[in-house]
Each structure stands twice: as C-alpha cells, then as structure tokens.
Image: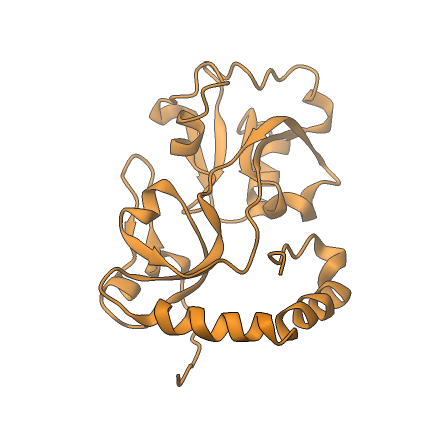
Length: 210
C-alpha cells in the first residue's frame, strides 16, 4: 500500500455545527483522501463511516470546572447550566443527552457553548462563560493545573481511535492486515514505548494493549 499523509482541517473529516446534526466532512466524503487518522468510533459516526481496528484506547468523558467551584457544581443535575464543548469532538451534547445518570442532560441550544480547542474550553470555564466543560479525560490533561474533573464520567466512544473511511472503501481491510503485522512483530509496542518516553509528560499516550 502506497501511503501518503496530508494535513487538513478536522471539519473535512467530520463536520458539526451548533444546533445541527454532525455529518461526514467534505474531504473524506468527496474522496480527497482515502481515510482520516485517529478518529474514535461513536454512535453518530458509525452511521456514516467505517472504522479500522483501533490503535488508541478509549477515554472516559467528564465535566470540568474551575478549582474554586468544584463543591458548588452538581454534576448529577445540570438543569439550566451552560456547558462548554469542543467543536466537532466526540464528547458532545448528544453524549451528555445519553447519560442517564445526569438530570437535565438534554440541553437547550442556549445551554450549549462550543470552542475550538482544550485551551479555549479552559478559558471559557475560568471566565465563567460556562458553568462547566465536557470533554474526554485525555483531551484536557494539559489544562488540569487550573481545572478539576468532577463526577463518575461516561463513555462517548464505541471503540478507540482508528482509521475512518467511507463505507464503500476497502482501505481498512488492507490497513488491518498491515497493523496486525506491526503488532505481531513487536514494532507497535516499541513505537508506543518510545512515544511515551518522548511525549508522556504531556499526558497518557493511550496505545491499545497488544
């Protein structure tokens, strides 16, 4: 397989906008590339795309609040609360709505606030623009100097991060064979160990167990 990588906007793989259902991004749907890298399977995405076997483990999603408001935020009842989300990420308002342990989990549009990055979500929490942010645990690790993670958390993912393709593509059948060879040879484990040494200070890498 002749593989080449390109950098592009997340929205060209998976596009979402406030108040609208997320859809397949124009880049992947139009065949600009064969696959997008590192996307986790969710209920919404499985209806649109196919996924390879995962290479990164799932992460649980939590509410995040400023350190001075931990005691006052009741994560079990978010009725009337304004919640911040990362634009287009899997830990979204639909995942909160499916969280049966939380009262008021079906949010009105005016309760949703979306930002582009974990740093922006941190800032919106600290400024009081939102009562809490909702995101994957691993996604917010770099911001925890200023924030507290509250509650039991929930899973917004069906399986971990993988390659994602259109449903009419046979890319994953080839990818999976190649990935299993990488695992069997021990090279994947070695790659993960090296990555952990170089970048582990930024947070858990989360490679799947092999």
